[in-house]
Image (tube, rainbow, N blue to C red):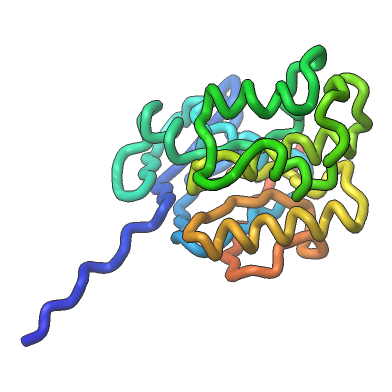
Length: 219
């Protein structure tokens, strides 16, 4: 009888994940997974817990219950640091460093994708020529593009993207889609929060629909 390879572990798997704030439920329990090469689209209205979920997955908040595995192992701090790149609502930039200095600083902290240079990443996101501009001088859209350059340089296989289309024009939205497509083709995965299906990368996608807790909706 021929031997077969065991099924691949999901890149991320959550079981019974729940979070509450001041004893008020925010979300859960949730069960979901995302494989290498696909995106999990997290949809829901304001207050449904989408941002909180990503912060829990990134290790910035502690879940009240449940388990999180990354690449088949428990999601401890070291495994999260290697596996996760998080793009939140705030750009995460140092205002008084230049555009290039910000990327070099972040690469020093987080590592760098093989074969990629900060200057190359700036060209990809449309910021070529802004290398010496201070981050505080950039517009909101340019700051988002600089954050996307930092994301592109990260070697982490799992992207957590919280409303990545915010502050971007149509060209910027297409940029996000191309980046996610390329990341998934390279064997990565992404969780993308969005208010609606009108903004979603055209890739192999699972859907996680989140709603506000029943008690809050009835209040």
